[in-house]
Length: 153
Image 1: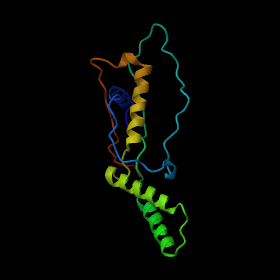
Image 2 (image 1 turned 60 degrees about the vertical axis):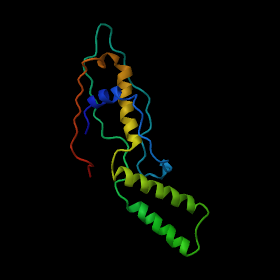
Image 3 (image 1 turned 45 degrees about the horizontal axis):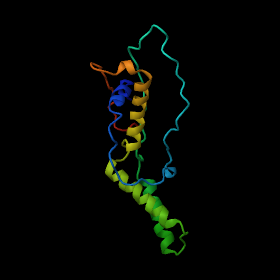
Image 4 (image 1 turned 45 degrees about the vertical axis):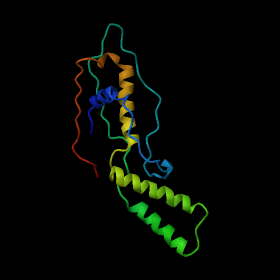
């Protein structure tokens, strides 16, 4: 669990580039896809008032798969079909995509925050920064709280 002040910190770092990485496989292969953007529901700060605090409770950003089992089983089925001479034309592409996902999981870690997840959290911070620019400046204090659990199960 992250405190919303993560959003403030993320806004301060939102201009930093994301780490470069290998090309990623088709995200539609994931069973858990990134949340789509929703329409903003905000109200302006009332006249005569000044924001002094904001908070956000975020579950987490996009992560790698929590298990390697599906990828391993998929590659095993492709190998079985290849041995039996029954592969479809697109099986080589599927195998390439699964191997790309495996490489990403090896590089990032099972269940770990991905560059997409980092961008999602930075985006939250950037939107807070745009919405409440008076909160970000010299002397800004940001607190980040975490559950301390690497990956909740």
